[in-house]
Image (cartoon, rainbow, N blue to C red; front, side, top):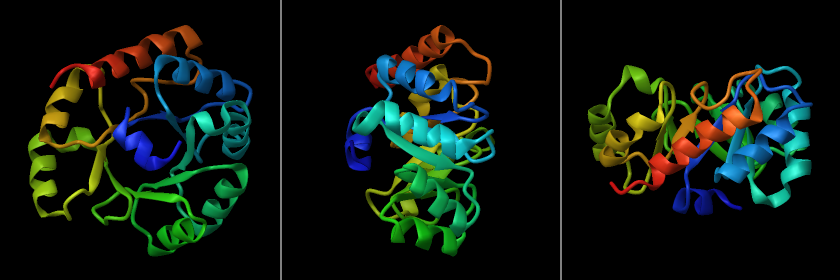
Amino acid sequence: MTWAELLAGLPLVAILRGVAPAEAPGIAETLFAAGLRAVEVTLNSKEPLESIAAIRARMGGRMLVGAGTVLAPREVTDAAAAGAQFIVSPDAKPAVILATKAASLVSLPGVFTPSDALKLFPAEAASPAVLKAVLAVLPAGTAVLPVGGIEAASMAPWRAAGAAGFGIGGALYRPGMTPDVVRSRAEAFVAAWRAPA
């Protein structure tokens, strides 16, 4: 799966903050069964590189696997070596973006610096109206994915404003959740995305 295929299909990125390597592949499989095709493991999780590698080993090319909360070029290198296919950073450090592109990975910086797509964080501090205004001045076709405070029930107004997809964290997964709870939540997000606009 490619980033372009994700954006054209079901552009929801599951953010696994705090996931442990032992549970990561099972959670990824559960998310895949619910319809999601992209997962981000934040580097502030316990043994995140091991989780990324374990998910890639289990999921192969069926699911995009990325690293989040990436702050330095060395972290890009480490994440790429573990199998990450995209890099999400909370800011737009040129060195991180350059390292990401040099590794032929997709870059999602957390501010308004277009590369492959933009992460609008924290979304709960903005609004669909803010997104609509921002999109009016960005290059045509720039994908913006709101992240932070996104619930299945809140997706429709964001989509109407032009959201290209979403990053979904604590509303989807928190450490200790059972696969059944994660699946139920993932299915709600998939249904919300697929609902008629």
